[in-house]
Image 1 (cartoon, rainbow, N blue to C red):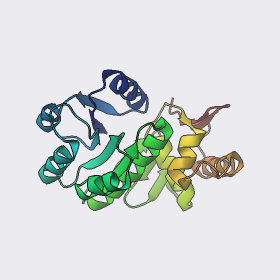
Image 2 (image 1 turned 30 degrees about the vertical axis):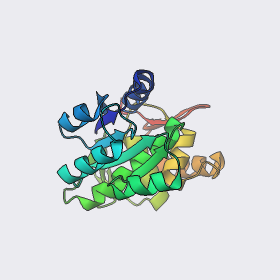
Image 3 (image 1 turned 120 degrees about the vertical axis):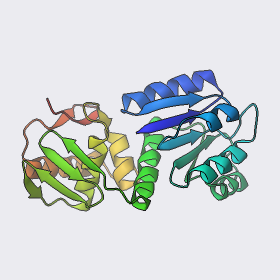
Image 4 (image 1 turned 180 degrees about the vertical axis):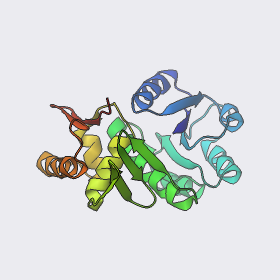
Length: 218
């Protein structure tokens, strides 16, 4: 997925770019409103609302007018309720207040892109080794046979498949699938065990002890 990061703080931008690329995203950056509006089309915009050359709210409106299907998440220090309401009315799909954790931002990215994907007519299919995932149809094939997954198992697989080869931390998985980290590791481990058994591909879903899980195809 191609992400446009609009952030005028160079240090913050560098940290976010590194973290996003580790998750497998292609990231382009802009430090001003002018650069943001001149950027090539992307799938997701992470938009700071405090920019040196224009109000980020106006940038959000302009981006939304130009592309109704692009996902936009406002990322800003403006945390008051009226700021949130204004940002959402301007076309943002979600609103994250600084400071934030990367697992929280990742969970919000996944939630927003799932919603925007449902609005698009095309069908997204992911292939991970011998496992094929029809995201829109919520179907999974493993070695050519259809696998029946529960909703939570399917969502866990989607999150892992979005970062093939990279470790997905426990907290991020719980936030993405249950929208809370209070669900507990035991519940997550049980679902992972069931997912492994149903897929029937040894070594596909790997445990990185003390950190999280990853899909490994080779």
